[in-house]
Amino acid sequence: MIKLKDLLTEANKEPLWTQETVKDVVKQIKKGLKNAAPYLDDIGYSTLGGKDRISILGKISLDPKREWPHGILQNSRWALIHFQPDGTLDTIRMNGYKDYQTRKKVPILRKSKNKDLKQAIDRMGRYFTVVRTKHPDTK
Image (cartoon, rainbow, N blue to C red; front, side, top):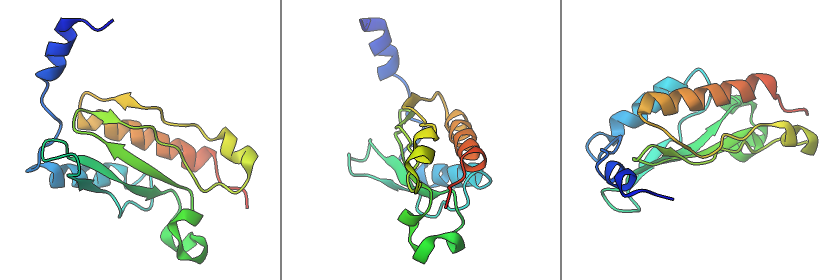
């Protein structure tokens, strides 16, 4: 059951970024994840929900671009990122594994609520590092 006190504290919480600061936040995310994921060029932001609902989203790959079969992102180990200004990081599921048994063993980063940007970047970095090192694609 949701209490009125919880609703008030959540409503008063400042967003992690605004329209003025979203470009800096995207740069921080790219900088924080550059060692965990080789391809981060598609990370950007969207104002589809309005100026007060600027989401950060994009595609990343755990394989360097030169190793993608036929140069296509979807042929690599890739994932979608959707990060909302209230700190919600949507579920991240890795795609692109050829073998079903390997794909089934790869962990999923469940939907989470983050207090600040550093916590979210650390969470994504740990996840991508574990998947990249412990779950290589069998070819």
